[in-house]
Image (cartoon, rainbow, N blue to C red):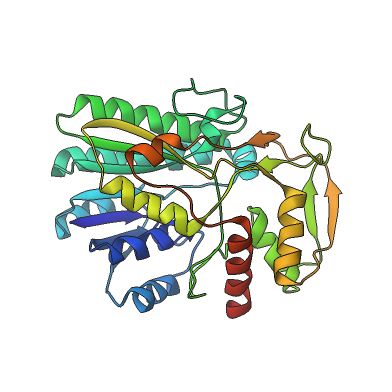
Length: 330
């Protein structure tokens, strides 16, 4: 099968491409490199020993997107591409709606026009809003706390209606939680352009001396130690979850949480990183970040039952592999 992976040079996308190649899929990547680098293609090919076809383009450009479908017989799509910073989405709401929703609708249109029946969407735990954890797929979606989350909710609704309106269409929504870690080779991991929006890249940059200290957004939440609690999952487990989902597509719409089911606080993550890597992370407590919630972790029983998938790697593995990646790349 020929699989189009949008955002395939990004953090989760690149690790998923590696696992898809290992599973025997042929991969076409579309990415505008807004938050990644073209050298990731070389690393993917070095790890996998296989070639991938790469289009540097924005999938919001309908004409350029269609050229991919003209050039290649696409059998399925794994859609990662999109703007993803929670805080930024609050200050740039229209940019987020325009980009993320246009991308999803363009891909739906191409699927219908070129008879592509398999579609996996990179959704997020943010769709649950302020529901009480653990989040489960049968919950009604909550009022999200930021425009990024709203674009995920709206994309899910678009894709659900699309799956129900096109005969034979198979759509899987993967709601995953907070990815950490890096590939064991140390070649690919998370190095965002500019200031990191995610916690562990920021911790790692402090550890290597790129930044002076870590800023912790709030220590007055109703959690075990006052800091936000999240379900951190190794990016390799997430990548394997996408392969499992692609191997188990059903007509209509399927929804799966991909998480560990374990809530970890910011302080717990910092302390684990310090212990397993023998480094010290200076930090400063600052005001809460707009759009954040106190606690977020998954119930992933459905994925375990239907996809025969569950997270295998622990927090120590995430911290070690991230540090190995940063030491390799600095």
